[in-house]
Length: 624
Image (tube, rainbow, N blue to C red; front, side):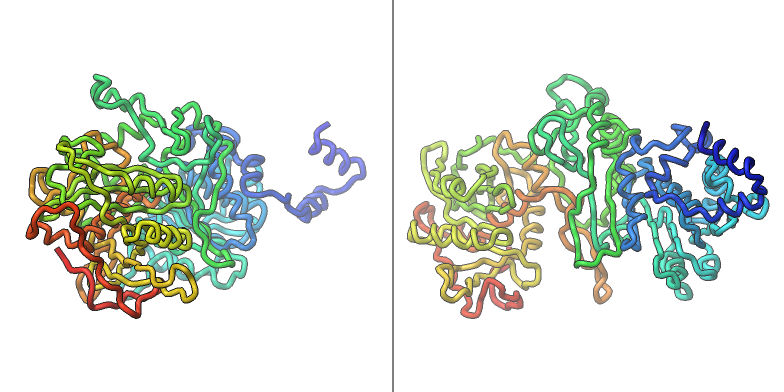
């Protein structure tokens, strides 16, 4: 006998009237469920709006579980979901709505970009959900409802369009849902923006919840701004089936056969696969299902101790409905047209499209191979510099040869596991095809990470070699000039007085991008060795210059990552190598005789410089 039958039998046996039974059942407290547990137990998908009708299964899109269950976190006030299209963001929202109706009823509002879209969604998705799920149907009052005002026995849901300010500024609400917020109109002279108007209505509820989801448009768009200012940001990590390490799916690791396969590009993308960034193992669509099931949301950024707003970010590579080949094909097709590429960046990668002033791409770098083998110096070499970008697990290094008019050539680059390897690499003698040899004249190493270890390494190397062939550096963007020689101010420490170079990376990135565009036989070109690898090429072009704000009526541009999770370590290393050449007066070497053993003395540091020095200097490195 089922529980339902047993309960009714008990009531009939003792002659309890139906109205008392109804009253007693209404007093029964709700089940203690999270949103995902409620959806698995009670949500029914209909054939009209779902590709997989029937009972909701959390195993279909496991990454939605963490987002939905954040709604059950008492401390969280705002949930932000930055997403591509077709990953289930709207379905997660509807599960939260169902949970509210059944478990914690209170006035609720859903805001869509337009009135028309709101009404259509109500008719085609919300109302079918209410009718299909018995747990919701018992609360729903269809005869008292309209398409934009859904009534229940214990609450109501207002469906509004962001283009109707009057609908956003009336009754108080506890729960607010904003769908595709980047398509909302902006503020006007008379009204605040729709999101702010709707949010104002939640102020009277101490335990309010706001769920906002959208595909991003521009970095200045509302969803990306909410992401940027969220107290906590989480990305979905999945275990590699080969090494077991938890990795984040990144578009740059999606690969397909190259030109040597003999296939046309349209055929090659059909064999797309993913390469694990930890072990290099091949991951296919067949692996993705189990990886998603065992995945977990990990915090990649957190501000302060109190977390009121949590942002979740994901791209299409995780989608169980989209094959790797489909993503690769969409990218290849999008490359041909700016508008299509814009859509791919937004709708597939869930990244903002940038208003760019200066942009590079990795194909441009590979075109700058000048026929000189890796590790061999060009015959015109007059200077050799290096840069090292320090990361937690490895050190990315590059060595660049310089000639007249700052013509340059990447001699070699790579990753080192420790400082001893960096010492050995930088003490290697490089030779031209004629046998002329030289060592690195100056290397700059990033001290922004592992600062004490970097300072100690530089101090040790100076003492061993008797000359400052390696100096620590630190990035800044507030100087008038390209670089400044300062010094470490740590009285009583062995690193006290160590020269420290402050580098304006943006200015050097400007020069690299401009010289990258020059023909490889141009006097001032920026070239790479023959056989240059694609990973290096992608990292040195991982950023582009975008407009970030208006200041005094003029646009302000900054270098930013094209994708928020991209790697730019080789670009930073190249910036340091360029700055090292600048310190050694590379712009004037065409005026002096070719004397490989000659080096330029380093400038004296300012007396007031410290390793924490603010960069409001007048003097320093010049422009060229």
